[in-house]
Image (cartoon, rainbow, N blue to C red):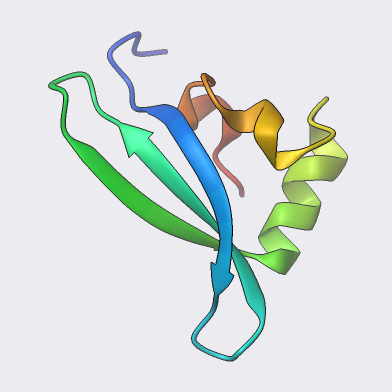
Length: 70
C-alpha cells in the first residue's frame, strides 16, 4: 500500500443533501493540500462495524486508504 496516501486530519458531522447527517472527513494529502469528503450514515455504519473505531475522533491520524469504505 502507498505510504504517500492522504491522512484523516479531522472529522465533523454535517448535513447531507437529503437532510440526513453525514460524516465530513478532512484529508491532508502528502503535498500538504487538504480536501473534504462526505460519508453517508450507511457507509459510516459499515466502517464502524468492520474496524476497531469506536468514535469518529478515532479516525484522525489514520490513512484514508486503510478506511476506504466498500
